[in-house]
Length: 182
Picture 1 (cartoon, one colour):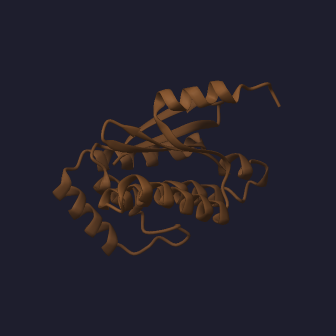
Picture 2: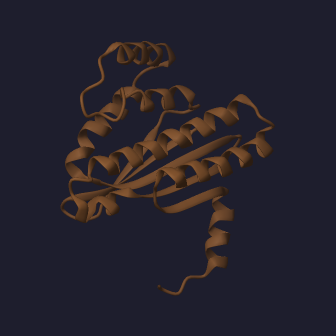
């Protein structure tokens, strides 16, 4: 392991107002345990407000999305663990909470994902509600991890449109970061 200054990292977290950060591979049990810690932290910070449930819901959705994506890559065992790693952080920005997740994605998976997010972000509250209802009525695609409602639900809980960033890693993969402000 390279020499790292935890004090320097701590100071960076303090400057960025990051309250919770996780970096590593996800498993169902890690999602649950980290979820309990996030929930306890938010309960202490927000006194059980609706905002706490929205932040927690966004955390769950982001971690499940990464986990489901990684599981879809199990056919490629050499890279499955590579896709299963997540960087997750919850911080504060003004009076809002920021939930960000980042993970490695195959480049051919980016266009459908970013197109969907762009479409969702183009909708107002009424449009999001209608799109959510429309998606709920559609049959679940065989082999899909769900009905595709997670991003829409996340967008409905945020105070700003979802944002994302894509950074190339190599010819085949990129690091995808999703930011939700609640």
